[in-house]
Length: 149
Image (cartoon, rainbow, N blue to C red; front, side, top):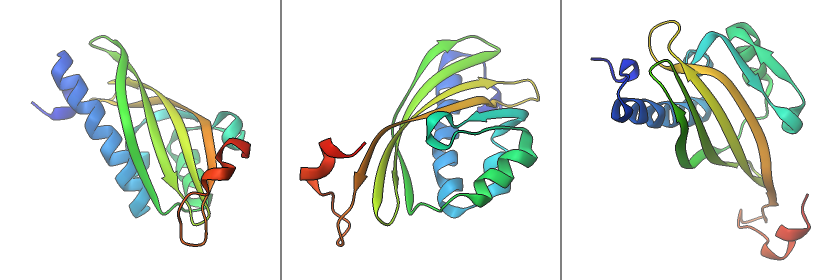
């Protein structure tokens, strides 16, 4: 059985964990076709207040990812399932994203489906939790954390 096609709770959790790891890795390596392949063909990415855009489908998603400023690294800090069935999974993920001068904490909400075989992202919505400036030596400036909006 393919890891991404299981419908029992353990297989689903493993599929979600693997999707999270692949998502971060493909972002960091800028492998846009592989990243977009994690989405359903009609997958939706709602960037909320972060970028104020909603993209639908592989072509729009890839165009969006290629146009973004490229972060240094993505680090998923946690992921958990909020709803589970044999055909749909909802999960939440926390991601820390490092840029040259900023660190962002981003919440991800995913709905995963299996409409075209393996588990894929049907919808992704992100929201910014925090934005922290980094000093010249790339360490956080702790005194400014609470004042950054």
